[in-house]
Length: 133
Ligand SMILES: *[C@@H]1O[C@H](CO)[C@@H](O)[C@H](O)[C@H]1NC(C)=O
Image (cartoon, rainbow, N blue to C red):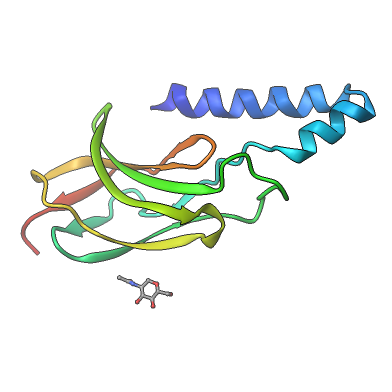
């Protein structure tokens, strides 16, 4: 999961450095479509989610570019090193910064995380899901 985050960062740095040397025409093209991977601010590491509860997932939209390649968001559950097929939210605008989700019925574990997709995937820290409050 860390290598994925690094890849995103690396791509962002590449994009930024190539923009610095680009011709005005290329700069304009780049400004038209920007990759936006907002960091998840909740859940935070160590959070405990109880199956069936409503929880807010939040992310930081303060660095949003004016034109986003894919503004449609999706939140998918991860467990350990694997992304599950459990979709917690979809078809929302990535700029809303927060969405309420229902904690899915899954086996207890302290190695759950979320992936927020728009242009690119961003992982939350690990948190716990439990069936007992
Ligand atoms: C999620 O955030 C909204 C807006 O701040 C709030 O009204 C709602 O109660 C929150 N939901 C939960 C489960 O905390």
